[in-house]
Image 1: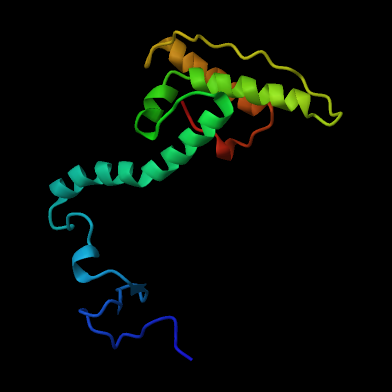
Image 2: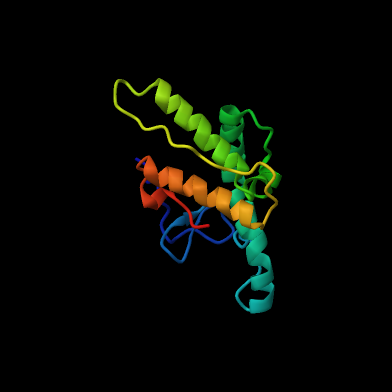
Length: 152
């Protein structure tokens, strides 16, 4: 029976070789390092934010699709963070979720919480921070664990 993990006997030119961590890498030599090396800290520091953004893109796409399905908004991954920045979409989401909770409470008593927000809040303004704080307050009041929340 063939082993699923290659041993250290494979060459670097073969499609599979052992990495320094004892794990097999399926990529060729030229694809293993997708960024600058650690020999240039300045290049690495410039490259890191772009790599970080690229790794978040699939999550942003999923979140945008989910928010679109729930809120009816037309959000796209490229501008998602800018659209969420003023807290309006978050407060609208809270209102929609609360309405769903009230209709499907299965006989459990629920307290309808008033969610205040300013629809005309501009990014970075006091009202944008207030919208976001109101969303987080609502999340805490319905019992959402702190581990799932963010800081504003």
